[in-house]
Amino acid sequence: MHKVSEPGRDTRAATHEVRNQATPLENHNLYRGDTALMEAVAREQAGWAQDDLCRYGAVCGDPEVIQWGFEANEQLPRFDSHDRFGHRVDEVVYHPSYHRLMAMALREGLHAAPWNAPGPGAHVARAAKYYLHSQVEAAHCCPITMTFAAVPSLRLTPAIAEQWLPKVLACDYNPRNTSAEHKPALTLGMGMTEKQGGSDVRANTTSARPAGSDALGAAYELVGHKWFLSAPMCDAFLMLAQAPEGLSCFLVPRWRRDGDRNAVQIQRLKDKLGNRANASSEVELRGAEGWLIGEAGRGVPAITEMVAMTRFDCMLGSSAAQHQAVIQAVHHAHQRKAFGKTLIEQPLMRNVLADLQLEAEGSLALTMRMARALDHADNPHEKALIRLGTAVGKYWICKRTPGHSYEAMECIGGNGVIENCIMPRLYREAPINAIWEGSGNVQALDVLRALDKNPATLEAWWQEIQPWAQPHTPLSRAVDALKEAFADTQQREFRARYLVDQLALVMQGALLLRTGNDRVAEAFIRSRLGNTGDRHYGTLPTGLAIEELLQRADPRPDE
Image 1 (spheres, rainbow, N blue to C red):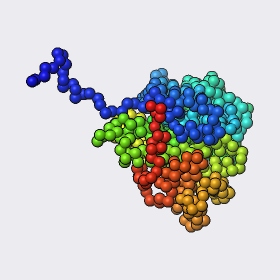
Image 2 (spheres, rainbow, N blue to C red; image 1 turned 90 degrees about the vertical axis):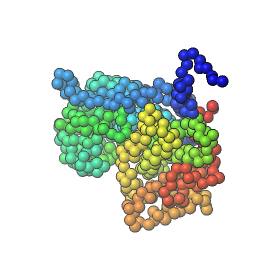
Image 3 (tube, rainbow, N blue to C red; image 1 turned 180 degrees about the vertical axis):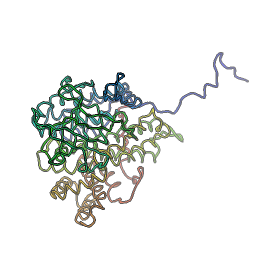
């Protein structure tokens, strides 16, 4: 018998029913859903911050806040060199959501909390909150990091610190294009890179001519060009230039104290692969006013105070990106079905997802251990860990993230490459931290330089690992092999990447053992140490704690 259709209903529309599609990952608590982060916060002396982090985890999972991240990337910054009357303005116009994210970060103290309230766990708590925040949108974190990292450098010149730090450390945000005197809070950037030198900052040609002294100290006029100046709407920048005494560091504001614009002229914005919500520019310095930071002729040591902190935040941001990529993939796998089962039930997919979670566990363990070291930087052992750990961690974690983001994207499939999914943004963002603040080769060579300058630095690394490297275990064998590799001084620079790879892996293995979760540590060590060949994600050996890793990767553990 022929079935009669309901009046007014077009049965052909049934082809448009949406089935077997995952829902957006939102309305969840980004902190409560991250077991590894909660454990790290408690372990590294910041348990007192748990309630605040739980509050902020809910904020970062709010759909409106997540949407701000999309909007800030869809509507890219626009450069206006002049106003409609022909006056030079050098202004970068951002989408309002960029400013919302900036205000959110600064009011939470992501640029200032450990400086305003130092003590046990201060850097750890700040790192945990930054880790949550950057998963919403990473690009605007660049000026947050630079403002945070500039504080130790500014303190090298007390007169400048006295005048500038109160507003730099203020937990407020004012995006107006006006002088520092008229703003309650300030952000800072830096300009080191020049087109002829890149990472070789000693090849910089920007000149600094003495212009007398004033209340802030030695004043100079800077003439030259900066090839990369990120976040050009910051209120001032730390810059390197050649003074008569040699390469020196200067604080260069966007506005002069007499109320005129400083001679820092933006030439264009860079059209970048990633980090697109954050403007990066080329600038000309045409007699720009600046003040000496630290000693004349010692610009590299002065700005190194800043670079060490920016490298730590690169570790932190890349670790956060790994976590966000994993939870997106796991959330999808819990809902998507194929061949009669959800993806999370498929053995090979379980292998891939567990492997991605292992990577994120190792990255977070190393990053948060370095955060605790920052809280105790006066201790010689902790200071040595920071010196080596920021270079090793920046190299390894940031370099692992692009492949990690891609693999998570592949878990999601076709939907993962569509621009209204967060995965394309994570994938484009992933190489940025690996390249900026010193590329892989720069970091590897910096490790060798640190060891040449102070061989005892490496001893701190072994001391941190030794309690967990029990004899005749894979970790102890890997440590012994690495010590032999360091004892061989032949072609050490040629082998630098291998040495740093292994430094990262043995430390991550030891730190995961230190957490007390032997099953996660065993999975990491068995899959990462002793395997000198290249491996793809999803090649874990059998017999590991796959179910536990997948539970730790679940962003909604209570559902």
